[in-house]
Length: 210
Image (cartoon, rainbow, N blue to C red; front, side):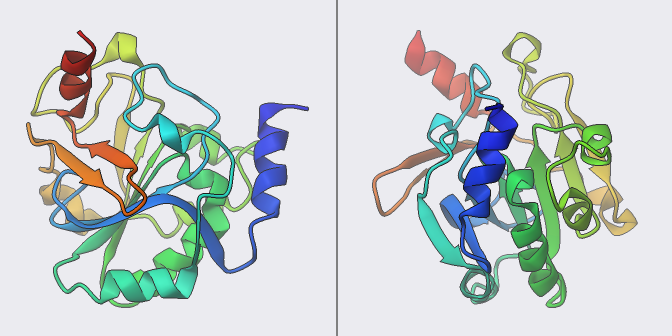
């Protein structure tokens, strides 16, 4: 059985109206313009060397969260200006994330996603189910896998490796592409899981392993 088939079969078992998450935080300042809620989904096939969050790789039930409950949680914090989908690979749960995005955009939040797929792959017939639906809701997409051999060692870069690209679908955000910094956020979740995020996080991981 192919890896993609394994991912699809697992995602089909997630109850309708739910997301399978690795984690969630409010008010991140290193995952897109302004302060943003960040939703890390569970499951990724790429297993990129140097990945910030390898605990997001397995396709297994982690935190099943009702979409409407998650939307309510995000909206309950007035400091969240938008939401960013990360992972894991968001597009393996594209239909559910599209539903969440619609609820949040209706309340004025912007929606951004990081994906290991390229935009061309997401627009192709081989894209994960619902990819077009989610793409239509995005204001910003950062595409392409993290390639350790092409890592960018600069706090001024919007991407973490040279192959990645930033696609801005909402012209109102063209002048807000300024989230890159040397900041690192380390979030400890309720179950003890550690999420390292931010464009300085690879420096932190490299130092820890040296």
